[in-house]
Image (cartoon, rainbow, N blue to C red):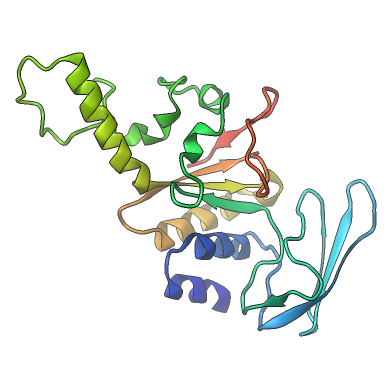
Length: 219
């Protein structure tokens, strides 16, 4: 609980959202400032990984979850030790919503070929980004003008959405998902929305999702 209180208290940064989600999902973290003593694996398939810390903590976990720390690394209190969760926004991964060709079709959205589908909550009934009625009285509006409005609104809305990628092995039951969603709702800035997705690429390098991948949008 102290770890969750810390990330909620210190603000809704990408790192805090990521670390808090990992705590909710039961991933290992440092309970005190410490140093990584060892990071090993047994070479199996899947591999069992072991992390030991100088504060006496030791963690054993299995692929596909991987360590993100190295021996000798100095850690702050509540630092995460593994992957499993990744948070993307337009600041740390510009235009992240264009990195997943095939993902749009997998969830059956109307605008399946448009990478801006993630902003569908902002669309009006005509399939354009909702301008809040500002341009409703503009008579004789042309397609070019609509496209201009759409583009300008989209450039604004993209700063109000972020993606939370979670390894599917961590989502063990509905209660875990509910707890994670509640945490995200409480920590996110009030002007933003999040998209919670499982079965996704790893933290290291976002590549196009293979055509045989299964991606599920949870929220």
